Length: 168
Image (cartoon, rainbow, N blue to C red; front, side):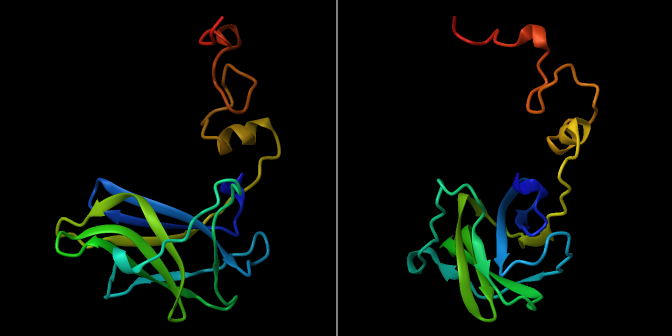
């Protein structure tokens, strides 16, 4: 559902060709739907040790992206890496800094080792369009063609195979 909400942003940290972590968040106050709000991102030179950070806990029952407070006219956020081991160059999370104040601290699900490479950070606004019909719904769910063998938007199993993997 949130893949079509253009108020959201995807922050992605990439190291090399094999390590990537992403965080989807909602800047608040949020802008109107179908409004482009360019927000830049810069990586701060300093880092924070894991022992001195309290990570924000996401409420799994809420089923919505975390919010990051930032003024409506702010056009940039800063990122500070949280290091699990400074000497070994292991990143375990990030701090989102707005106007010099830490607004959100995110712990990665899996640590990232820098291996002498500089991490790249991207911030992109989600540009989504809600589906108006079944064909568009298939595209939003990743099915590249409306020539599927199933009428269900969430599965592509032919009708004659439905339930074959269930226990009798």
